[in-house]
Length: 187
Image 1: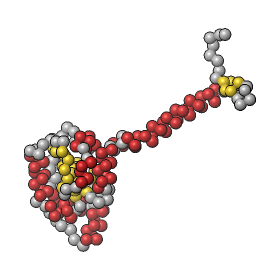
Image 2: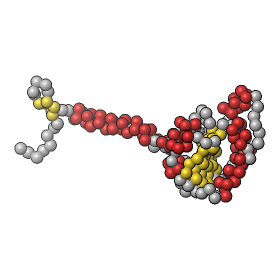
Image 3: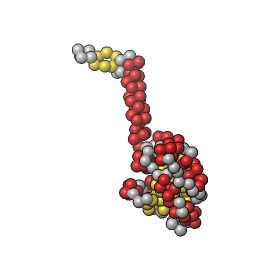
Image 4: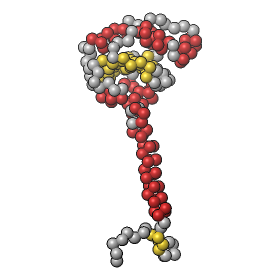
């Protein structure tokens, strides 16, 4: 027997062995590769790595989407001056935050708390939230997420309530809310 490569062959149902054409042999490999590509492309959304969306960001979106706007506050510690200033700004205008359906999610160190209090915060991990919103290396960060789940504002400094309210009050969903309520609470 020679050391030459033998063509691939296929056994027919009648027992006869016939060589496969190069096209047929190649197509099975191509078919397997295509199957792997399709399988991988469908698995990307399942593991939350497509388009920068992570599983934790998706969880925030699912928990509050269409019901609340979310102001995410990231701070290394509760003593951070910028974090304290943001909390002061929120506390001086709580009615405005409530009127605009804003839930504040505070990620301080390894703790996650919400204002107003919510059992939804228990399923959020500080490390995962930091990773999801790329806030691992920041000492302070504020991110506003709209009712549609999209990021509307991302700052490394406190956001004045009036500036935040003006941004929100210009959004289409908020304009509809104002029309339906017949009023809005200012700064």
